[in-house]
Length: 288
Image 1 (cartoon, rainbow, N blue to C red):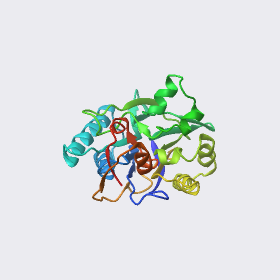
Image 2 (image 1 turned 120 degrees about the vertical axis):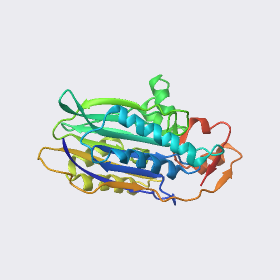
Image 3 (image 1 turned 60 degrees about the horizontal axis):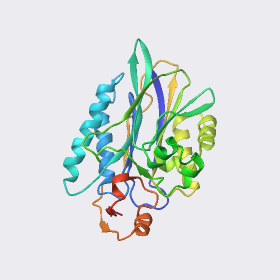
């Protein structure tokens, strides 16, 4: 399967540091969102990209190979931050996989970064968020509109680095000619609804232009979080890779730690950043 792709990332309108990182090169395309409010969130996302980049240049990747990348990322992250700090990252993406002689998307996700597929003019979210609001929606306690305003809408229930072993979800779906896949951090979906995503993905033909248009639209909406998008198209023409390897990561920085006294201060500090559920009680030490 031959693909063409594009990618874009930005720190957003408020943050000084981009804790998102991304990888785009066959057979793997992914976005990692480092844990906002945690020591070394940018390091966590960068380590994920480094581990998955070992698969770059192959014709396909197997589920076992992808899961091994998750496990190595978790191990390196624990070693990097030590026992007295906590860091984590979401990871969402697709890998080209071979199965029964056909080409498939191996979709993988942990956290609330997302994977969408545009096919036949319809946009479908493939991944399922690992988040507090998704759990509430699954139980019928809130609807999608309430989820957009819920005070814990940025709280995730799974991530790489916040537990002993990562627990990603996997899907294997057939890859069709003219498929377009979007992989993005929650900085994008926090600003643009599905209709806006579908319109941009439908109307902007070049995948690099589409990725940049998505990020630009989020910024124009006042995006306060880091925002990243990878757009991947299935191409029908034979040939080799279309572009050089794409690996973008936030700049490494030594974090500043503050102790917050109350929930109001915590809400102001995270300011829309992705945080793990375990960080909410008690009020944690967080980084700016």
